[in-house]
Image 1 (cartoon, rainbow, N blue to C red):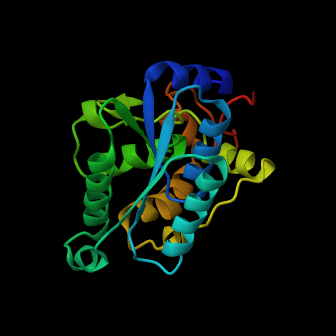
Image 2 (image 1 turned 45 degrees about the horizontal axis):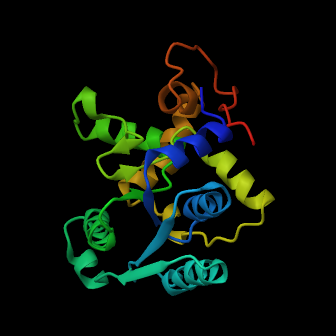
Image 3 (image 1 turned 180 degrees about the vertical axis):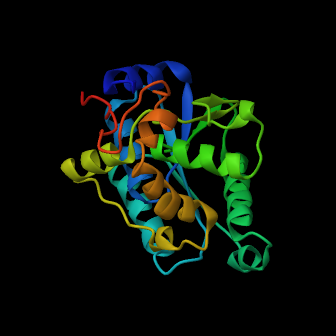
Length: 226
């Protein structure tokens, strides 16, 4: 059962004394940024990593930079090496290595790194790790792992998009999300929709209702608005 918004707010304000938010400019991280700006009593900074891989990369950086400047929020940015990403055996793995290398380098002592992972990401991660042979004790992302924090793992993507649209939060859509040559995109755009035709795996796997026998038409449980 997903936590309600009030529970998420309480958790954010109790988990750490300082945060560093990783914000890409997509809907998930822009919602997270707006949520923290509205509800966090804990100080936070924002970090953006420009991979330089897509035509929209500079526009995303500008969006996040401007949003933070308008509200007096500290903003840090870094740029990747797109040639090294394209030449690597796995572009996704190299992009992730560079991104987290930057985030770990700029994270101050005592700051927790916050990412905008949500319930759909949890589902995709479980499926990917099963495919890759992870042990069954390490299939799920944890809300808190070391100095990393994922406060929205109980919230479905659909609810995040609904909230962002309703609150007129700006974001830029990552056009590469439709490219099924990347394994996670294939899981998201091909495998999960096929599984959802048989069973609501977002509910049974990501949201932890493993004992329920819900059909594909049962909606995911959205976090309660607060």
